Image 1: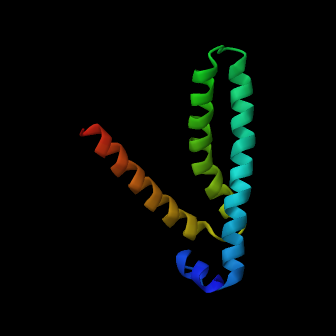
Image 2: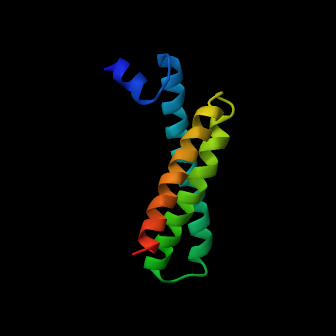
Length: 102
């Protein structure tokens, strides 16, 4: 099972896999916390809860893209996550262009 995970994440050893999992979890927690700060600030100005939820999801998505890179730097996984971000943004842009062309 571990060897399959190593193949999926394209890493050589379990220590790099653990570092990757740690980066994913820590960046998720940090981006949730920062998104909560932004939406609590906007609660003072916006009363529509559906709009506020949309803003929270959007800020969470945007913050996660930056936080994951900043968390990866001290753990030495920046090159892995830069390639991960490139693939992710390429897929996202192709989905976006697909819906624009409909």
